[in-house]
Image 1 (tube, one colour):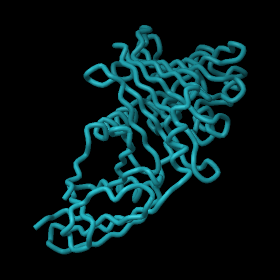
Image 2 (cartoon, rainbow, N blue to C red; image 1 turned 45 degrees about the vertical axis):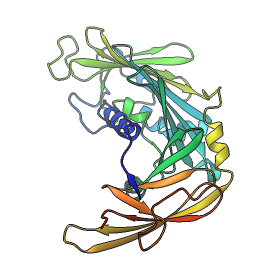
Image 3 (cartoon, rainbow, N blue to C red; image 1 turned 90 degrees about the vertical axis):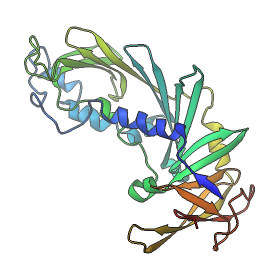
Image 4 (tube, one colour; image 1 turned 180 degrees about the horizontal axis):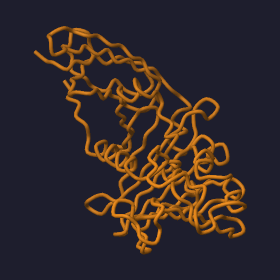
Length: 310
C-alpha cells in the first residue's frame, strides 16, 4: 500500500502560483479611473503607441499570443530583498496547443530547485527517473491548464497612465493606482512601470514601485530564452506514451461510495500517481489487496485508489 501525500515541492508550487495571483494585474478593480486621461502625457498621440489603453496591452500579452511569436517565454521575478525565481513556459503536444511550465527557485538550503508542470502533472526527478503526480482537481476544473494570464496579470489595465516614452525599439509606460499622483492615498500609494516591445507591445519588464521611487519587485520577460534546452528532455519523453487508468473508490461523509474512472496519456517512462482532494491509498487490484508498486516502463496499467482502508 502506498500512501499519497502532497510533497513539499507541490505545496511550494501552489503557494508560489497563489502569491503571483495576488499581485496587481488585469482585474476589474478601478480605484482611480480608466487610464485614458493621465495628466503627464498619457493621452492623445502618446496613447496611440499602446493601442489606446493598458487594456489593449493586456490583450496582446496573453500567453497563447506570446507563444505564437516565440517558442518559449521566460519570466524572472525578483523582490526588494533580492530573492529570485524563474518560470519558463513552452509549447508542446498536438499543434503546440498545450503549455508546459518549468519553475526554478532557490530552496531553503540554498540549492536550486525545479518544479515542472505538464498536462495537469507536477513532475519531479528522483534518482534520475521522472515521478509525477496527476492533479485530478486541476483536470476536472481546467483541463490542461494553459497559464493564459501569467503575463497579463502583471499589467494593471485600469491604471492611470502618467507618462509614455518612445525609446525606439521599446516603449516605457508609467501608471499609478490613484488620480492623485503627487499625494497618493494610503491604499494605492504605488505605481507601475512597464517596458514594452514597440512593434508587438509584448511585456519586457514590469517594476512595481512606491510613488517615492522605491522598487518593490521587478519582473523581466524574455522570449526564445531556453538556450540551454531545459524543456527538451521533457518534450522528448512525450514522443512515446502509454495509458494509465485511475479507478477511485471514494467513501463520502454519508458513508456512500462514489466511483470515478479516469484514463490519461503519459510518457512511457514516467511513473504517474493520482493526486486527489484528500489523502488516498493506491493498489494494483480491484479487491484492494495488492499494494501499489510501480509496474515498470512502457506498459499500460491501472491503479485502484481509495480514501479509506480496512
